[in-house]
Length: 98
Image 1 (cartoon, rainbow, N blue to C red):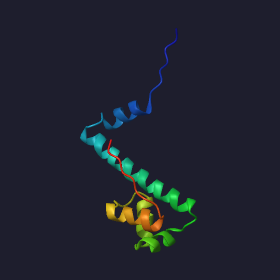
Image 2: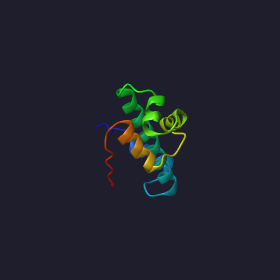
Image 3: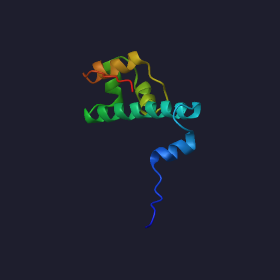
């Protein structure tokens, strides 16, 4: 019987960044979540047919800040995230802890 030598994504991440809970892995996980949040904001904005400028105006910030968030170049405060979701998109933010 032939054995599969398939490496999972989790195994690759473990190898490169260490096991969950290690400092290097936690830093990577945090960076990934920041990246993911930027992608989610960009996807919602484009789905709604809005420019970065329009979104910025609706939530009281500027286009360059929206761009930095979408491009993972800036950390985002929770209060700003809530403004983007509520005022910019007219939606509600749901958070979970896992």
